[in-house]
Image 1 (cartoon, protein in one colour):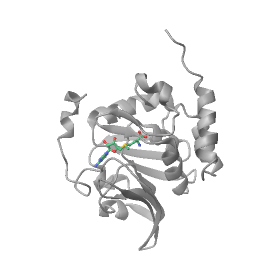
Image 2 (image 1 turned 120 degrees about the vertical axis):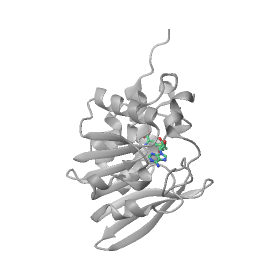
Image 3 (image 1 turned 45 degrees about the vertical axis):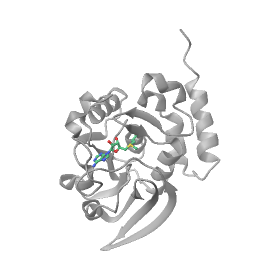
Length: 228
Ligand code: SAM
């Protein structure tokens, strides 16, 4: 039986070489990613790769995003400790955990029941209590809990979903990838009164946001227990 890698050392190296050496300068984001055990959010057989510079598979053909992208999207949201945040695409729950350390409350929506339930159990067992995971079509947002100070969409939308725009608080920020299946641009939307201002950040490659205000749904997510 081989010993576990030195996760703390690998994590410090990830923060130094993949985040701080690029353009991640927000000390709160660097600190959280320095503390948070990313290896607890990936399948057992991939733990040794948890701090590498790329995305990893998490089941249901989905991925945990590259650490740099998690950091950049978090930094671009300009979070404050009192913020209430909506995340679309819980996946492994890693991004949810990062957000939870920076704000008052995170609501996260996942369309695959298996992923959402696993992530919710993992977040609870690791002690992240200011988080609620919902199963459903995140392209419609979570109107009952709106408005949100910040919204992060971790799957690519064909266009900015109208319900998400409407659920932004005045002064709110939203970061999301928008484009087609082959290429998307990370965009930041900022709401001032009834004006929504758009900034283009960097080209990215995300899995699709399926649903009513996303791409056409390819399958029935309630069937996900039958998939590898
Ligand atoms: N943030 C995640 C993490 O840290 O592991 C990575 C998210 S993964 C790149 C994108 C996620 O969006 C997948 O888990 C996928 O099932 C989910 N997704 C796609 N369409 C969705 C929708 N309409 N509503 C909610 N989740 C959706």
